[in-house]
Length: 573
Ligand code: DGJ
Image (cartoon, rainbow, N blue to C red; front, side):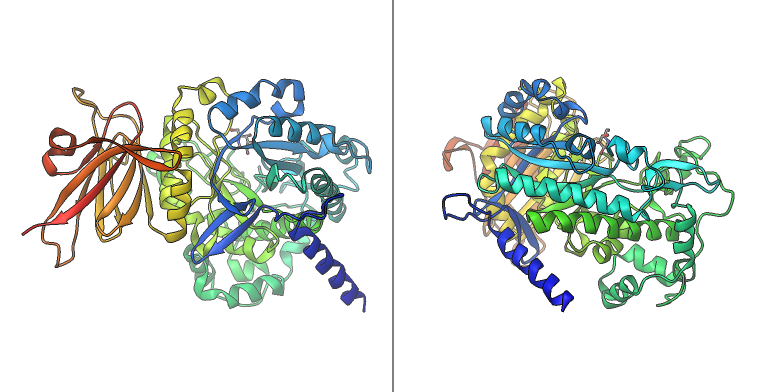
């Protein structure tokens, strides 16, 4: 009976939350939501797909509305359309049970004043692994809100995932925040999505070794997780499945019986995994292998369960898309504990999917050089790609093309967007966003159809091949006329607009075409036209031939500025 009541209440909230609750007017408008068609997921805002040209503020900027005042117009001018801004537990609930949403309201008002959207980052129990954003009344009461501990029993400045009171208090605050956002923004939809916590996971240890953590670690793996793994066995992330099978592929037992031994007793965790003491080879390779996987899997499950409850509590109040972000394993952070152990990393996506079904996405903070590799790893298992943090320099301005074109990302967001160099009106990010905002409707339409590709080049990846339509496109650097050096970065988005017809938009690339089909013995360029989109319509410019098409060998989008070309291919014998 009790269960039925609970279910009814949840269903009621779910129905209410699909639509915003209007105040006086009986008009309802659909909330921002994710829509999945085939393999592609898109963010829908006011009934239409929306491509997020985002930017994340520095951690402390949005704690002062005065400080923010001059930042908004600069972001709007650089064609950012959504700003990722922290909202912290300590500032909205300074005293237990007493909420203050002045800052939240002010940020929403300021964003609206510049026609910008917001993604709020909930700095609740954890921010970069640690718990510095929890209110003072939580910090002061470690009996009620216990800390994770290292092997020596020392407390870490990290709330333990085993603290039920911490989880409930966080969920309570997050629910209050979401209720408030629904009340003030349920009709306007300035707020598009929520990030729940920030880069969770244990730092400084491979797992929480508090007495309650150790006890849980000695027990059987919960049946919910084992059932999920068995049910999805064929679709599991390959490195995860291998890890499980290498440990014997058991379906019941303790964590170590199922996933093998954890970090050896007494072994100190290096703060970073710098080279030296590692050899350069170890430094290059260690970050791609999994170390003490059981510790990371165990923590991933605990964080996923905790975050799921916080997310669920928020969604019951206001059901907009919610995601968690990950601090990635990387060269200088190769062992769990040097990066937050248990975060939503690519090797444990399945554990997060099993433990946190309330979340819509698992998102990488993608600063590493291996941009394509990580995008590919995060788009497995149907996970939609959103990149909440990344570079905002020339490299970022190139990678955003690959994200939208090759991985159907719903959004991209450089960190520290208000930095003078990142936000500079003539800077690489502003120029890329201005260009992409012109192309957004076409990118979205082609993402839906799967007729899009994207490429970013740098000095370590100076040519790439992409398959699109019936052709292979060979993309490499194009030097500006009269120069002898490649640009540092280059990028293109390629839309297949018909059989042998492409629209290519980018900078610094040359592109040749090849076809392996027997009916296309030799491929030539029938015509190449440069142009722009004005009010969504193609406005042709120069007809390109001769040097500009490398005497028929391919396209050149060279020079300082982005450009767009349309090409038709033909076959000859
Ligand atoms: C990742 C974090 O998520 C951000 O909040 C910020 O601290 C950046 N790192 C700084 O590089």
